[in-house]
Image (tube, rainbow, N blue to C red; front, side, top):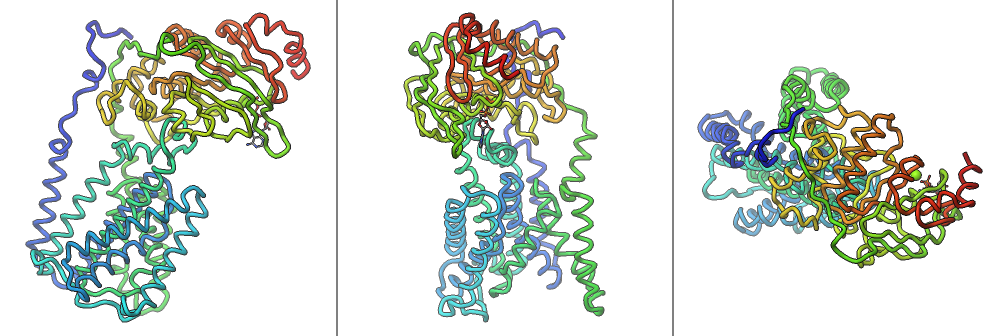
Length: 593
Ligand code: ADP
Ligand code: MG
């Protein structure tokens, strides 16, 4: 492939996007038509109620598409958050004559607070705990609604709920809710391409890799959870105004499950799916109404249809449709480009990049790493070798913060990073790849590398600079030779190319020190040569590399300095040729292989 003759910047070649709102003008025109229809068509009371329910429920289900679809965290209490918003508007406007708007905002704030607190207390624990805690929270909220009679009127519920004076009629209030739905839908639709949305997808795809690429995993999860809760609260507040009456049985655990079913049925990955699922799950019972004379039959058919849809469309209805559309659409080709990727030169900073002293990591009685010292000089390639199980990967995991050191000290570029979480070490200048490739599998190659480029502390990127981000990511992909395939999904790349993408992701972050864990493992001989050549180009720019590898040719050619581990201890360290001839090293290798 020939390179373009002029020195056109890559971002220009990618095509300059129009301003966001202008690009989505059709969406807003469509939304305006819906709002106008809601305001103008004289629905009868029954249809109006169904629409009111569908519109408000859909907003709550959008919340699930954020927390579950984007971030991969379960929330089994969406009806509780919905109830908090509904009761805030209900009690506030009816018992205390507070302005509707204040009550709506107050309800959202309470849901947000509850969601954030719940998230902060459980999201460190992971999957099953989160599910259990959200169920308990749901039950507690229901109990409060039923039993604090002085406040909630107990099982009788709250009636005479007010609406804002602008939207007193049912018709205008419905139009207002449709407008809210359209705005929230737009925000949720655009969220995946914002920094926060990208972080959420990265966390969902691969938590470890997300942390190591500079994402604060915990904060991202809490944000997703709180965002989901606030959408539940907003939806509930709108719902209360729409029906003018709320009672505890409307916000029970079964309703949380219903919200969840709606989002799974339509497709949890997109707000379009949420809207479809909500509409269907409200409409199916209406369609099956004629069956109600036969007890049991109705529920059986209803349950069966939901099970069938989910069984045959695991990504939901919209997931099924949209994956078909993607396959039909021609692949977007990006123009090839020659790129020089700017990497951190060896001329900035002191002589030693990484100073590891007395590092130890014990797993119970097993001393996987046992008092290791490593000194990595700036601008060189430093190899860490040793037989299988000698503690190499564990050392890297302790360096990048995936494991906490049992003892010892790690100083990167003068900063003590021993006790930092992974994302802060990345911000401090550490980049790494994994022995078992860890990419974000639902994203394109370019999106993966953009996550790397976006790390906090990457001085080459202005924070929030979308164009600069894409440009940097394209440069990194082009640097590893995959620029022309930037928009393909990870699954379409060979194993060797996936490794290159992982390296590009680490390089895009402009690290001070690059850690590579067996980059040649699993590659065929052509791919090994490509990798070898790439490492030379990286080293030629003066970037400091600490590499684990089994390939002695690669190690002896590329590295100036070698540290050898055996049974978690350092058995040799020094200039490459001398170390490889060291009798302990020879016997460690001959003894085990
Ligand atoms: P290497 O990368 O040099 O092949 P590792 O660092 O992966 O070796 O493993 C060193 C030792 O630590 C091995 O005995 C391995 O079984 C053990 N080990 C690694 N990770 C864990 C873990 N999470 N829990 C318990 N033991 C572990
Ligand atoms: Mg290993």
